[in-house]
Image 1 (cartoon, rainbow, N blue to C red):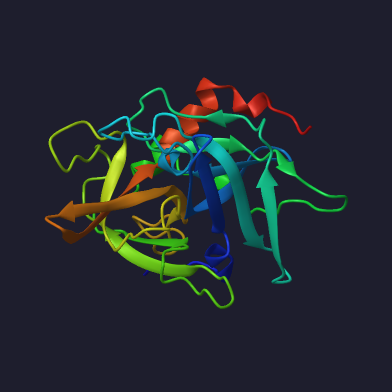
Image 2 (cartoon, rainbow, N blue to C red; image 1 turned 180 degrees about the vertical axis):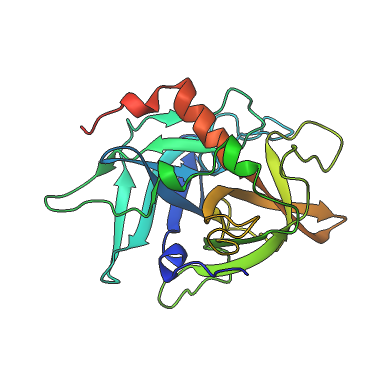
Length: 258
């Protein structure tokens, strides 16, 4: 028995508008992210590294002089009102020591006006760790909310899609025999704008029934596997364990509200 995620999960996705500039030319794009509370009352933005680092893993040095020049996130409150914040230029950004792990953890140091605050849906209790990953199986249902090109542009709302885990989640997946980091393949369609979407494994089974578990945030969507010039039907996400490792490596538990 599978249980669908709550409506709140749809709106856990935040729309990201990012600009990169080399001082002459500016390149902009849309992506997705979500907010995670790491220590009490301290919010962090989770997205892909390639969203904020234009030169990340590029085969040429074409974008080596480009730096993040603007970052705006847009979300919705419980009363369905929309709000946007601009990231402060001094916001701390952390990556994993293994550069293949395409995740960025960003201190939500925003330009706020009096009375404004971020609203978030996830705390560390929702984030799957290594022990929870032992309960995640091949063909488990996953869902991901985000802002691909097909999102609701009239009302600026995310859309929710689903798929099934395709590779063994206990092991790291590679589509080309090279190390691709701590990622998992899933059967689902990831397209431009969905980078950084939260990937959620809904609750399974019932209490006291074998092989049952709670629902968990298990990763960050990163892209699709190309096949020729099309879409293979297989996408991939980076495991939530990468976020845990970034938090531990940089002692983010100790960060306090400013």
